[in-house]
Length: 272
Image (cartoon, rainbow, N blue to C red; front, side, top):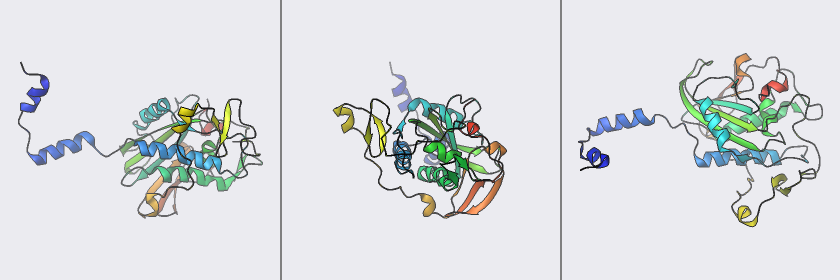
């Protein structure tokens, strides 16, 4: 008696062009983040967190979380250009790009560039600007991140087709109203109990075996495809549901939320 596998193997294969068509229909455009992209996401967050100016005394090291990644992926698959209203006590950053595929370094760079408009001393953002992505990236108490991407033939809320959507969720969430993203001071001088200092970040104390498996620090920002392909177009969403669209030049044609009224920081990362 033949097994199902041997019965399948005995079936005649369709012509080669049909095989290729079936493969394209099944797989579609690449949408899941690769292991390298996940590592890059964490490394870039930690790089920017370690380099904040003025320096942070209590900045925790960020690490990948598979549960957050699954949550983010599930929402990305809905293809909605707007924050997840059911994200609970999770921070959230969004990014979208119309190009050959997702560009993780460009996404994090796009969020981090908002630092130019943020004043740590007063914990305020310049009028008409957005800072919520940046403050979430460098929120000192956040130590877990998980992201998911999805290729959307149509993205609800955007008039473009064929968009790669990236959703990143964070725990604990940042952007708590009335609080600064981090405490200024000598790096690691206010690490929590049970944490040690590594590359200006507070990391949980590990045993020797775990330390040997730790990732090396990032010493420079990876280049993005946008600097090589001028046709890249990308967006980041602080609250895209209330944002317009404007065109500007930034290593290619870029989409960005139209400078409008700032929302209270409480709404930017999703604490409801």
